Length: 403
Image 1 (cartoon, rainbow, N blue to C red):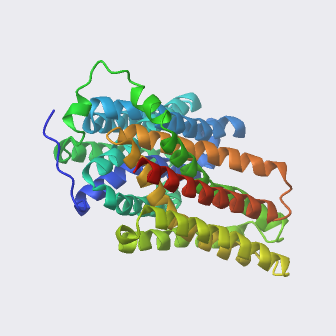
Image 2 (cartoon, rainbow, N blue to C red):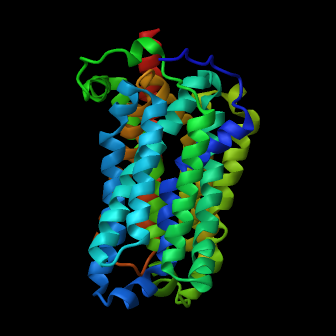
Image 3 (tube, one colour):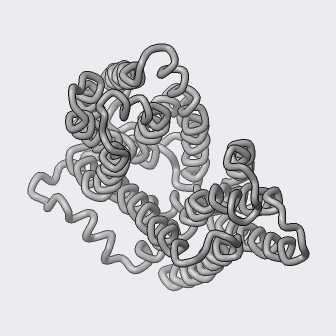
């Protein structure tokens, strides 16, 4: 294996942009595809349930890929795993682009999602390898902001592609993007995994994952990441129904409010980029989770005072809560991955899986309540942020005991 590049104070912008693009492939492929669903259904003449499988099973493939594929990058290196992930993404997207049946489209999207999971893990592991640990939350915040921008514009790009050609135009564009990224990674990205960690061919493939799960502190940080992340999906999953059933507004109005949702997260990430290093992981997590809890309390108080308006919910849970998450999540994620180094890909896989699985439980739990009141989602978000604060105190005590 070639010599490992030294850790840098900040990653060069072209390299960071390349890694962010690789990280964003999964969210981009999903969000740019969604506007084409009616056209896909019309072409293949299938029931909605069958059509939805091209979304749900692709998401499942991505989630399982996060859990299972991380050890490959820890054992064989970041560069081979990243190239392999891009190759899978290209192959799956090509199959989807030229699919003659819905089954072929489904298989193509599942293969592409597995590849996107590997590129997500490998590119973030490269960042963990090359960035000093006291600056890792800054790099994560930068990549997250780029990924959020991709998610924001992806539906618009999908609509444009469908209007300009057909749903296949979206897959052609994704295919071209995958080929370009493969060429850039092949020519410009060196191996970043330390040679001793990569040179253990007889080591069990799941050894890094099992080793991490045996660490009590890492499991605590993993749980904390899942709880923090879950507040946003829980809110987003319920907001469209609350707009109609609780606030008696037309469903189209939700789209106008939704535009403001990333604002809080952008502002939180921006603070991390500017002041994160001097604040430290503990303070950022505590401050972010406290702001999130405060947002829930303010929302409940305003609603109870008679301000039964959607802007109350979106200004507090939409903007203020997301601001807290933008402060806390980069540091919480960076700390968990730092704990897993040099098995950073396995660490990222576990972080991603914990976030998605706990978010799924949180969203499903809201199905137990009627969608005529915002109080259940407010209470759930308050519980998630409150438990995060408790876990943060435990994590600090564990750190002091180790010291």
